[in-house]
Amino acid sequence: MQRVCVIGLGPIGNRHAAIYQEHAGCELVGLCDVDRPRADKAAETFGVPAFYSVDEMLSKLSPTMASVATGGVEYGSDHYEPTMQALAHGCHVLCEKPICNEIAPALEMVHQATTRGLCFGINLNHRFTPAARLAKQWVDDGRIGHQLFMNMSMWISNPNESSPWFQIKALHPHTVDIMRYYCGDIEAVQCFVTKAPGRRIWSTAQFGMRFASGSIGQLTGSYDIERGHPMERCELAGVNGRFVIDDLYREATLYAAGDPQKIVYTNPVFGGFRDFGDTFRDRLGTFVDQLNDGVAPAEVDGSGADGLAAQKVLAAAIESVQTESIVKVDELFPD
Ligand SMILES: NC(=O)c1ccc[n+]([C@@H]2O[C@H](COP(=O)([O-])OP(=O)(O)OC[C@H]3O[C@@H](n4cnc5c(N)ncnc54)[C@H](O)[C@@H]3O)[C@@H](O)[C@H]2O)c1
Image (cartoon, rainbow, N blue to C red; front, side):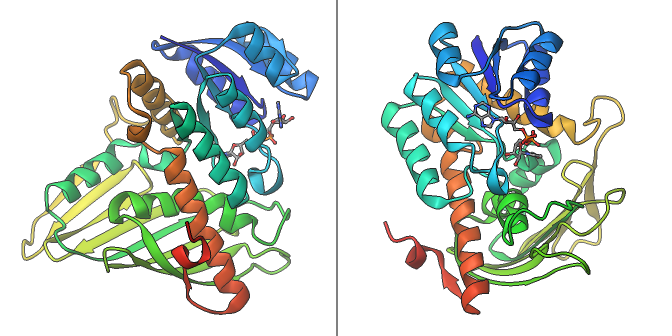
């Protein structure tokens, strides 16, 4: 049974707190935000003590796990400090995405968790759906076979104009993680960017990727498209078959090569995912369940290392835009 604290109580931290309070494998014991009214309001909602200092909360409550839902510049600069504090207190940490908006602190976060033998996960919630797991099973069972290409895309509306690279760094941890989940490491990236009329930041991007396996991938994403329609599509093709996942959990279709019949998984009305919020329930719940099962830190699903790997690919994409060149991830970040 985990004793959980949530750090950062914006909309997302409140969502985390509600999920932990519902989950049978853990107990929500404390909440912290440097913004006192936010901390107080959440404490009232969830009926647990409010703190305004992370260290004070961790010292007083000694939780086994902390959920870091702070934001900051490019939605990630405020993740480093509380994550390092929680790890220093011996807590396992689940941190929101992106792991961090810069690579050097992200490396330290992963290193600190590894050194202390603690579990460190990132909220890469888009891979935590029944449809995504089924597609992974298709890959593992050889139904895709030798991989040829992936087409990944995600588009939502986000009018925030905080930094030119906001869309790349804050939206695409999800999409790059999905690409890596099915196809493994990405070794080379080429990226082009554009923007909707009136926008100042690079709010739409297209990336060409080469995986270490030799297969190739395309990723398109945008912060310029209003919600209401589908928002994500993932297609993976190999010599034995091809799958398409529509909208994270809604539908997954397997087209076996040479077979005119297709296999379709449709999110069930009874017992299926209700909405996007269930991706959070599944992801946070999986982390708690893995901890309760005594998972080894290296086996955490959607780990800090996965979050770091995605961010390195995105940094390579930004380098590609700036230099108008193909960027090799390992050359940009030699060990
Ligand atoms: N996984 C997803 O699908 C998904 C979706 C949306 C947002 N997010 C992520 O969730 C995170 C939070 O988003 P939000 O909209 O709730 O952000 P927000 O800015 O509204 O809230 C963050 C809160 O953290 C607090 N905070 C910052 N540093 C702190 C510290 N050191 N100690 C205590 N409190 C601190 C701030 O005061 C603020 O109240 C972001 O990183 C974002 O990328 C994830």
